[in-house]
Length: 270
Image (cartoon, rainbow, N blue to C red):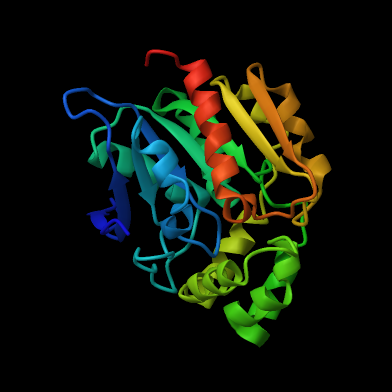
């Protein structure tokens, strides 16, 4: 896979990111920024990159405490504003004024916050399995299970909540192995932070073109939690019937193809 680059945030943490760019070198290509889910990493977007990197500069961030990014000290408070600042500082570091911002689950929470608080930095927004916060879900119940069984054990027992029954066994094992690389104590803190938020009453302030892709058999929270996005002034919906939460892992080609379609239609000649 693409080698990791890194930058240092304003609070001194080293974060990893990846750039895949096969666009014409004499052109200034627009940037697609991919933000991964909790318990994941930028590697989980491996199947998306070939679909996107010929037409867009694809940038993937390992959120703090995930993947190859540094885990914050245990005593350091974790705040949503800090996670959003990490994304803005990455854009500054790579010299990008605004990006087509794509978020899977918790990565989409950061994308939504960016679109609401720093709209000039978001060219468009695409949300995959990402509701307006995680408060109306069973996520807090994950923490004692992770503590008792470990990250891999917990996810293995609940894999039906994340991947379809007919998922490739190789994908399942890779998914579990990748998640298990993350620090369980930090992941617990991260999940509890996200589970404390519900900004469903605020999303109507998002003004950029937005694509919302919904797992039709949503298993984290409820499919009803996506309804607030209908308040957006410029939004398109896709529903993946019968699929549980982790659509970006289960059907990466379908997700990337729908994203391509959205961007090519809405930003012709960009």
